[in-house]
Length: 370
Image (cartoon, rainbow, N blue to C red; front, side, top):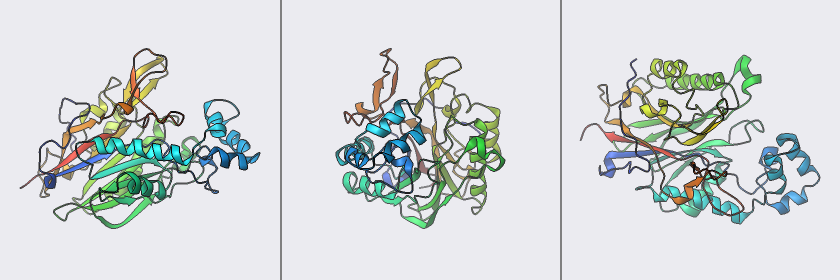
């Protein structure tokens, strides 16, 4: 298999729909929602206790604070947030609105949205019913990831396209590396019907975080590749979401081999190093450099969607359209130390400002034949 990059000038906030007719364009977005939890307590998941109304937390004392310390340590930001954050209905609804506002500010609502960090299907039902009710979106969220090691968050998918078959979730097994890798989010697989009747197979991912060794993300990627190999030959495949592969790891030989040997195609900017652009700020702790960027969020396509090889299929990926999507001032802030560095504005429950600590990324599929 051959892996070729298409060079491009990356545009932040690019109109990735362009002027191609809607029926000839499929817009795909990956957008980490950053802790999209509802306000209800899940008794089976003590890691959701941060995201509860303060009145509920007080009614659970003293057990609530003890659980906070068990899973977040006895001091620091996260344990204090677990104890004192008032994640009430008003805050939750503001979070949903901020997220939806970004999607609605895009030139057109995406046809497929892969969403990391969703607690359950209910949060996506609330998002759609409250903020995106006119968009005709189908929901895939299987609430399957192991709890509490994965914090009970999953990858969800929203799509304007009809769902084909039954979506499934796949556990990533780390084998002898389980102690160092722990648990992670399941890979979500769903099929969607394209306008010409062809099935687009979408894999939503959220690989182990940067706190774990790079080897854990390599294993997760290999599990993804196994799932793709089980599909019928010449299938149209997209893998999207939070791969958590940072700007140091992405240019590595290991990552390149994973891409090349398994027929993945992607924009070259995902391997371009630690300068902007990127979907998230990356802290290079070795050099103590905070002004670096990574495309933790990616959209990859199978070789059948490559624009640089022949195909009998009607669709190809416009790799040059891959970009970060910054469409609202709520997505942007300068760093807290006031040095002027730009970074994604996380949602602040106290003020209701911000959206997520990730920027969405987008890419489009186009008709190969008219």
